[in-house]
Image 1: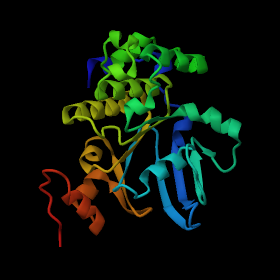
Image 2: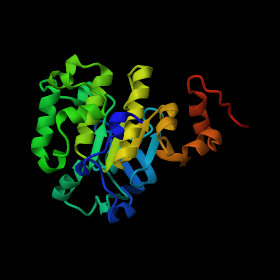
Image 3: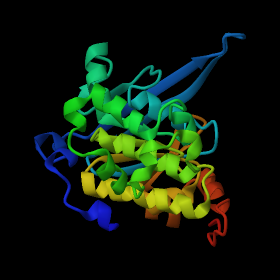
Length: 280
């Protein structure tokens, strides 16, 4: 663990265990999400009867190829995207029974780190200005740390504060996005392909950083990825999606070492440098 993240976290920076931790951070029960083609009227079922649960401090992955429904699932489950049938409970609150105001109050508890960090940052704002905007919106929630200390936690130097997104490398921009998420003290971090497009060495650093934040803050982590190697290095359990359905789920090591479904075997066999061979 890095020394910076291992430092004592101020009371406001760490989610202290309490009775609410007995309630899963996220529960998805038989979720269905459908999209309608505006031209043809055809209905496409992007998520088809998916269930999962994430506890405080747990790291869960959703994997599958492009178009499998994994990002649609994640956005719906966290109240950030369309949702249809089924039940979603975020921090104990059913999203189908709360109003817009309550949902807005819950949203700071869920922070998303997207795959395109430069696309997530306002090109007109310096890093410092971006932090200031968040602090203005959530004063009490963000007062636990100053900007320099926040950058230290994601292994960035203070001079980064006065840079604009176009002046940041991909790895630096992604760590700024992680810092913005961390500033809000979320109970759930959703990482949607957070290392896609980054150099291998930078990927490893970003993944290690996400894991350290999870372990030091107690936040749950939902990782969306097509890369099983990424998932295995960070997550406790994995849900494999294919055409909107979860075809296999379980602890990462069990799924990796003894996959039960052909589709999972194909994903594993496609891993670069994989020594795994399909069992017949």
